[in-house]
Image (cartoon, rainbow, N blue to C red):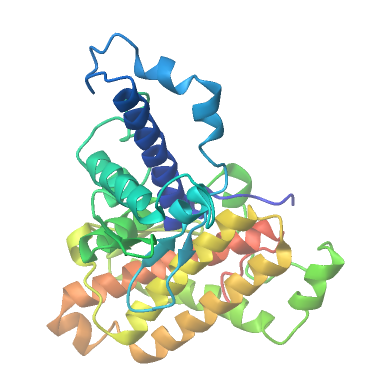
Length: 330
């Protein structure tokens, strides 16, 4: 089986924010040039926006690499960028980092109210509705903080629940046992042969076990290893328990790692799967779904099932990228 890159691995928050920061820098440069030319910032301007950004010096001013890091706080999904510091330089004469950060921050907020950035639709991104629920904060140091609101987290989780992971060769992975890892690169084998391997495979099998029970209850539908939570909406996702928040945080970390490594670093991908499986194990121990919880608070039980669906999809996709079949049961 050849390595498979599942679409769900592209739905991390990091690539969304990098995309928006790049577009905000474009808008900031556009506004700067228009201001210098004393032109009105209107579509009817005699010099089209496309012509403005076709200038070589403008294109070169937009960096391909955007510095963006996750804030180390498992209770929220927040990122910080030093892009203004990078663009101005500590000892350059290009202006104050904080002023540039404020201008980029203003452009980010403007984009939340726009359907397009003057060139492309802003609605064609799969996480477009998540972007509408991001707060922007600029500090005096020039750092730009981007944080998902509770609604933003809920919208993101709902998108992950709805996203299918069934390219044809991935859908055929219905093995009840894990595939031998002998075909993996040597640097990956060193990790895969560790005792942590069991936790990853067990995590996926445990997800499948919980979801098969939900299928019997009519709450979840199943097509091979694709599970779908029925009658789900973003209003469902209101995590309160620390184990729920920790699992959501680890889901964000795993998807960010998949994006940053483009599934080309097997050791990094394996470690992401390992960390996700450990977080799920703690969630499974701490957050009940059946019995009294399902009877007294069915919304809470369904939300937790949604987190199980997401975890199963991501673990399965990470294992597939390493050419390891996800076990249906152990």
